[in-house]
Image 1 (cartoon, rainbow, N blue to C red):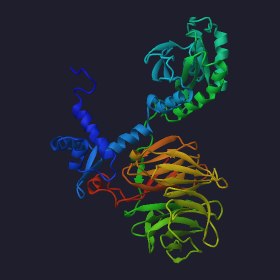
Image 2 (cartoon, rainbow, N blue to C red):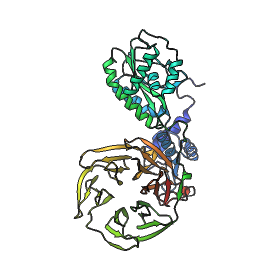
Image 3 (cartoon, rainbow, N blue to C red):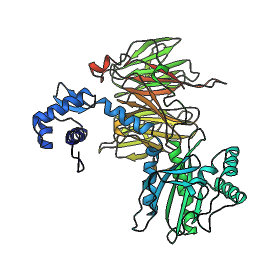
Image 4 (cartoon, rainbow, N blue to C red):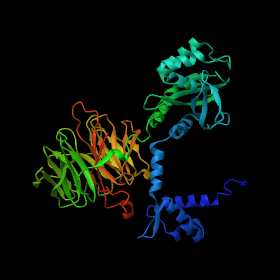
Length: 531
């Protein structure tokens, strides 16, 4: 029997050390390097690596003879990030509330006619609230319970209160049903509940309900502490903060009883046509009847229309972006820009930017937004002038991969794969705001698209998926793909009365290992998804 922490788990700890070391080395590590870095015998490292490779957590690069993290690590990270359960979704917000207040924060859920404590972040003070995990408390005299009741449908709440036993725990406990109903109406209106020494004298608490996207209450989070520190005035100030934190937790949750993978690989179809080395820059015509896209590495522009895909033009350098120009497109490449008609006729574009163009997109009316690399490192983003120069509005120290203009919000968005960040840039404002950040294990951000409901979509290259964020930056949806490297995506214009949207997804083939291609034969093909 193990008597000390870690006893009997030596092999597991060593395997985790191996994963940590490999994960911290972007270029990978060789067996000898791992043995030396971890101070382990080479035979031990060999056995651990063999097991990790067999489980897909580590892969060996046969050319450089080093070990890198395997796709199984990426899949596990993406699953944990994209579809958290209640405790996982609340963890970050509980820590933030603890740090904000210095008091203990809690997560609880309704279990029968009581609330049960699921998670706790201890406060910074020696004298603090310290309810035990798994502890059950009455609903009517706790901020968590009252918050949950306030978010219930009226009929269910009324039935609950009618049958509840309103036992007094302190002189301040609410034991009158009409008074409790009035308290719950106030709680619903303001968004948070208060426990004013109603279950323990000398302890106050403020809580808010966690409600998922379907409107179903899933639990509550709260902050509790001694009454002399958590005065009534302070509770009123903290209430909106707790309510906002609870809203963010709920936004991450899959609606209860819903299919956890509403869009699966089965819903993705490959459009007719040949594969590309690196498909990118899908661009629909204004009426949605034609789809332009490019092969970046075998530089060419394709046109998909009437169920047929054809190459319409060969370009002299790798393609950086496609821009709509009437019924034609402008192919932006590393040496300039060319206008291409549906029949494949090429003509020089208007004066174009000098320097390394990283990304470009259409804006309102005839506006074009572009991002160029700065000589001193970083990116300049602005509007293209008629003389082919850039009216710079923002500068940043990282390289931008894609730009997208959100028509509904009249806002420019940019992806920064290096930090995994989607940025929001409001014309006329100098500030660059972060919309969301994706963990590196989930894949590399690639491309931008916007649905009719205001959602922001991006592809996760090396992440086998495309994802949707809400306008406030909450991860809302993950769609698995049958290929590892989606590169870009675009929504077709919606026809009047349509209830679904058509999403075109370009993919890459050149960077997919041969052993992975056997499981992902559609790599490089143009995909379509109805959402």
